[in-house]
Image 1 (cartoon, rainbow, N blue to C red):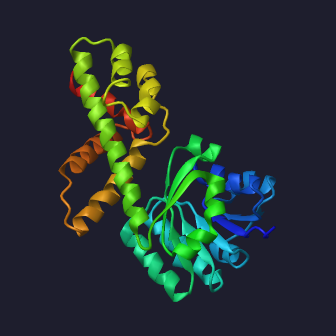
Image 2: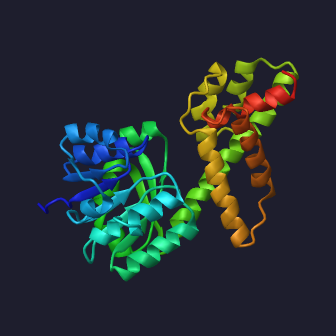
Length: 294
């Protein structure tokens, strides 16, 4: 039986902790780094080694994976000072699983190429619950040979992984999905507010919608949240606003008009301004209710 690759994990946030824990459970030797060191304790207790910089981590592993917050963090942990690329050996594989812009990702690709590092963009689709269960969907783009070497790693974190291209395709695909998910929350909010103002029973209306031609896995997943009006976040309004900003900036650069996305982003901004940025993005309905005088 082939020896498992040594993996270095950078970024232990809401998604990073359960995803990296699944690698430990699958028997991968794991080294971790997080900017706030206290967050490494849980993984350390489970047998992971802890390092003080991405550079030190990268020098000890075959595959480096990052799950971080935004473009500046991606650039810092990859080709920044004390970044992973300073420690990674020739032929190493670097996988970033965050939601970042194609523009920043392309800069990472250029830096990786200069160091003979194989770079995979592998953003995920799924919530923290799916991350914990190891049932995420993973979209990867980059060198196909590197993807083939990492199929088992992806299988430890997700139920499905797909190779979608050799460049930034996975970045675009992740934004496509998040745009459609975010726009669905806006469409649903507007329609439900209209029905509510018209006298419909709130729970019955949601049940009927959830069993109609417009039913979807997303609406089904959020139906109970809407019924209970419990907007504890699986994905926050602030996070969705960030992803919409990336999509809109990218669209501007490639001359794609996105009027609906632009409008919905303004409403997400309104929610943030009202102090509701940390609620689930389906709390959008509360703003529409307020505007409708409900």
